[in-house]
Amino acid sequence: MTVKTLKEVLNKANKKKYAVAGLVVLGWEDALAYTQAADETGIPIILQAGPGCRKYTPVSILGKMFRYLADQTKTPVVCHIDHGYSVRECLEGIDNGFTSVMFDGSKLPIKQNIKITSSIVKIAHKSNVSVEGEVGFVGYNEGKMSIGSKIEEVELFAKESGADAIAISVGNKHLQTTKIAKIDFDKISAIEKITHSPLVLHGGSGIPSIIRKKLARNYNVAKFNIGTELRMLFGNTVRKNILRNKKSYDRIELLKPTIKEMTKLTKKIIFNIGPAI
Image 1 (cartoon, helix red, strand yellow):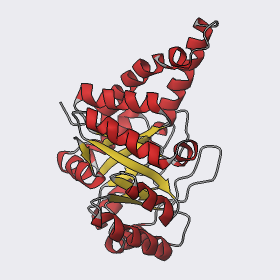
Image 2 (tube, helix red, strand yellow):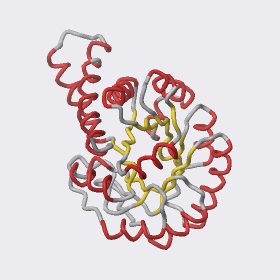
Image 3 (tube, one colour):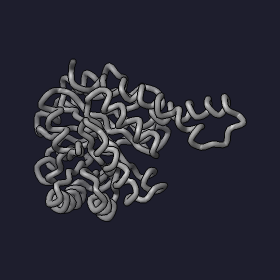
């Protein structure tokens, strides 16, 4: 069994100066592709079940699927609940085999964010489950605007929440289809002066690969959430395959080619931010 906690994987990444990809899962095909990429590269990954995934498939099923894939994989795999907006969502993940949960209190006042996060941490740590928190608000492309992380709030959160990793807002955005994010390196440096916690950047698809690599090698950014660029490849591959097989109505035949293509792109992504060869 290679299942690991987020704390185990990210602390090692920070120590060795690399980052780990938090890969957004929507179904069997992409989850299988991600674990195949991990095996073929020998680089750890984080399988992430976000709100959309959990709305479509029950957490009890996702937990079993993630654990099954981790058991088949030689490389460490973290099973992670992404963007849990309530204590209930995080506890559901803990109860169903996830080794890491994220409480997203980014829309709450910092004191309330800390209070709820710390209550989850106390429960999670008893079950050897890690907790990721968020300070500041990471916005959405063509959606809600970001609110940058405040240094004093990150410091307070790091000292009082007990979270194992902290997601920050420093120019990154969710759902960017092009790599146009402008990262505030000075703010990251300032954050690193007040906490040694592994840092997380959501919206990794919008960050140029060369910048992701720089952040992984030279800063305490230990996790990039990657979803949009992988979803785009999945969708484009399905469209092409439908056009090539207009008479096919076999779901497996139409979706199976996505696994090979997703594996190739995932390998490229995790090589870029992973351990230096």
